[in-house]
Length: 398
Image (tube, rainbow, N blue to C red):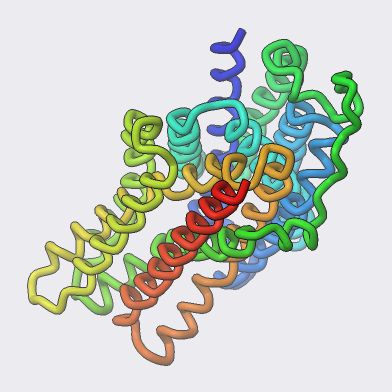
């Protein structure tokens, strides 16, 4: 039963990644069909991000009330309904409308699943599960491409992914009894009969008062800012500042994502031996090495291209390790609330920092990208090491 549940969770993580690349992959066609400017893609992604942040902040209360299995199944179902709504949308305002449940569903399942895995599975599985997310995110652009070239259009791609999500949601609903058999702690708080009164839900204000929580939120914000800013602007930097051809820049920009996915798969083999702290340290150092290679003011572009791949490889274990270390750093009773807040910080970084860099580059020039990313990487390192000192001090005082 343990192996079967683990396989189901892997499929759930793939389902998390499936919708994430659809807007970007299909927007060149979507905006023309809908008769809206290219820039309107930002409106859709910001609505989705806002819903994700709200759901992440509510995840502790939702999971306590409904249990991780039901929250996961219902959230995937909500996302599936939103994707089907996208597939029948004939105007931009309808996309905006369906983006609301899409974001809410994505945020709730992300926080619930990450906390469940952090509590009950090893760091190895956390890395491999997040690699599975990358598989889902990599598949959906191919679905969009095949749908457009096959004549069913971008709506067909959303319908295809929506149907896949419906199947995954049905499997998750059917597996709810399995979750309870494998781990009764997955039940809602009200159903647990251990004789102990349930601890109250952790509020946002209460979580922020826990020593170390603001520190890890800044670190998580910085990591997601580095990842999302690199994904959006790396190809433009290579073309405008380093003279790389557009085709080569696009290929190496995609290798940054592939480096993250492959790096998480490989990290899984050493994660339990190294531990979360070392995974985070090594990852941040490797990111910095990659960014320094990109920054080197030399004629050949080989170091810059290699640096982008190296940075992606270094980024791979940081996100999963931060999530997986949360119960150990802050206690199992607080982990769901804190992971939810971490998800909110992550999506805040993803939403705000790429456009902020866009404004900065318009003023200072695209050449500042490596410096911008290095400053965020330094912030990440300082905050994670500061958290380690706080946790060690708490352990020594206990």
